[in-house]
Image (cartoon, rainbow, N blue to C red; front, side, top):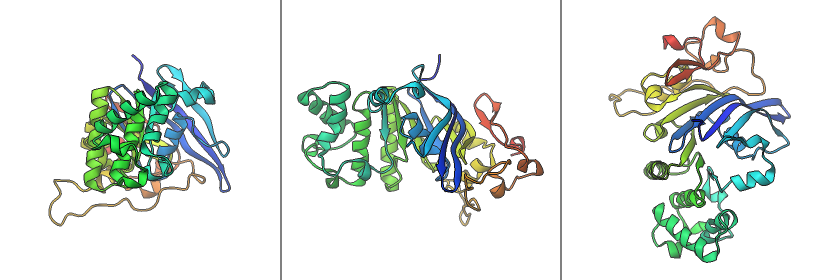
Length: 324
């Protein structure tokens, strides 16, 4: 049985003043119904661009999808027209954007924004959409939903606005939700509540969930699978349990070492990843992580390692993955 959603060899390019930038360079991954998959990496590694490509939101120009396939329920979304994609977005695929304050329209009430997609995709009348909106706000843990529907985004805290975004994403019974940095602007307590809510809804409603984040620690408890991205490529992929127990790429090791752990001893320090991510417009023929890698060898500067299977549940793109 094929996956609900999958990306195959996706390449997304941008023409910039500095030159051609391959923001996404040949990534592939799949998500099943009811599964939570995480896309992890530093800012600028291509996480959000891959999500925008899946939803047909890459600005053209300067962006262009050079090659690849994006499968959803057996259909390649890259073959869809703009009108067809507008029916998919918000209807069958929900999106939770990074900053809810800029994603919600400050001039419209929460009720108008929450019912809009239901009236468009589900053809609900005003009464049906309002009843459904009240159910959704209760589902995501917002008290007094009837009152809240009449309020504006500035009446809500950051955590509540993010809950509203989740409600909007769920409003039309989507089969897939893509959450782009859903907890970035929230404190750690609210982060845990939001992620717990999303995990529960994914499990109970059998919704596939893709969480895009820069923090491996955030997804440790909630993701079933993890895809680690660096410089536009997936450098490690596998089940969360396997990657956390036996990371096989130096970048994954670096991300894990930079996150606080419960078993850290008194006086033990976090180990940051030295250096900066590469300029994607000036990559050479070698491994992009080589300048920051403590395991770099002579062969790393000659070619880019392929993402190879290291077992049934894990793959890594490193020439020395067996030594880690």
